[in-house]
Length: 389
Image (cartoon, rainbow, N blue to C red; front, top):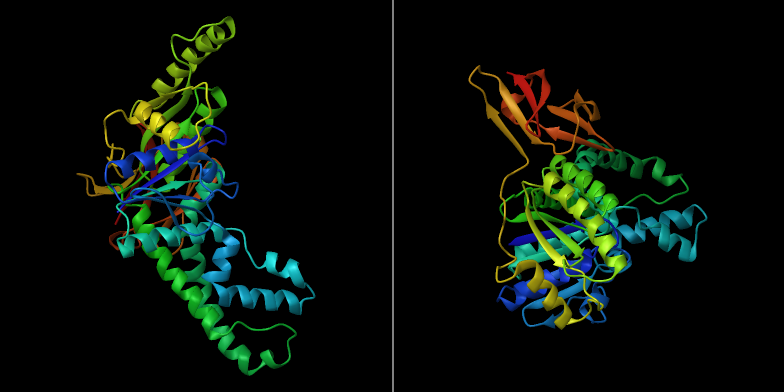
């Protein structure tokens, strides 16, 4: 199954590009679904359909839906939701407040990733297009399998053991309900599912990130950071779509000034992202809404090509052995300076990387268990970390 994830700064036209991509692939015969995981949904507006949390068909070979975490909690994780509501009620938080507080931050990420896993296992679709929230939220989405797995490994078995004792002792006197076996089993299932999702997201041949930006300084800077952080999380960034490009034949004094300014930014983009497949969509004088307008947008971006194509299948993170017998971890790090990186040796055969505002714990292969961390260096846009067994 092909998974294409679109990301970019808010307002760059990410939803329109996502919808145009999905529509074009459906027209080419690929069984396609597009899902919006942005809480401020606009996918339905773009397609010209009234979308909700249920999957609906919007065109031949094309299904769509907008993820609603309240709906997901009620239908998929009722046992967890009921326990959290009961806990809130026991602490004097009742009614609507308990219902709202039972939805923890990050549950949207879990729901979105589980949909991807379900589609993969069921074989229902050839391709899934994910229209994401702006960059910050999407980085949380990309990091969630790692983070959740770490918490589960460290905490779940300890909590489970504690709960067995608590039900026989303090459970009789405390003033809050203890989670039952169904709740704990549901959490354990989530842990296993997140491990499968991690494998899907880090498959560089079938799962790729496409970044959308406008030829503007703020959008370029945020896209640079997003590109670097996606590499840190070992996600394959394969393409760049420059949206809302002013046509060269635009007339009027205002447009001529904007066109000159745009030329400077287009040069910045060319220099910054020379390793990526770059596509363009020109600014239109009408709103991009509905099947016909999206089809025109797809023509501008993809021409006669098939958007399901993988433009690059390079994994941003890989291990190799050098001729001197040392092992090396190679991580793609575009737009990152050496003083922006902190590297630590973690516990349980891991290293910890701080890059800008992001932190990632990288698990090492078993062959490097107990290996000595020799140091790290930059070169050719990569961070190289060396080990000696």
